[in-house]
Length: 157
Image (cartoon, rainbow, N blue to C red; front, side, top):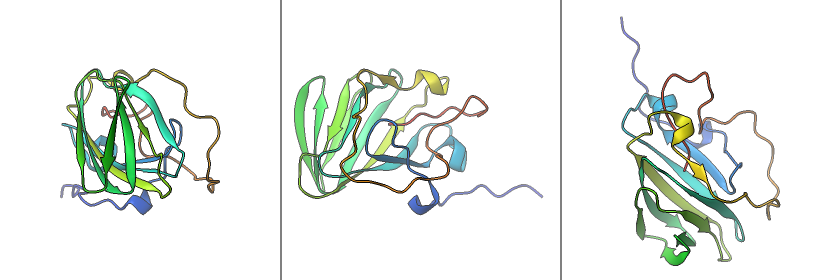
């Protein structure tokens, strides 16, 4: 009998990654469902939070704002994105997500294709913000980025 492939993942099951700002959770990806063409997840940013500038040398990124609003800086050009709107981020485009509003922002992201190796998929171009405006309870582990032991490639937004 073969193992059944997991296809449904709840955001509550995934510990947030806060290394680059905000709370990022990769929901569907190589580590969670065995995908091999890309991954998707959710990011939540409290008012005043940002996800540090970075780019993806192998992947396009698709963003959809579910709640709140964001400013997405694309190669230093600010682009406002409100709830119900989406944004395309081309390969090698530097981008940063900022919540300049008064309510939390939630965005769904999808990246594809995957980089040949996880460490090649995401290039930071600035340091993450040092202080978080909203204190958060510690989490036990993060599922949204692979470790050196992972056999499948994946990277975070």
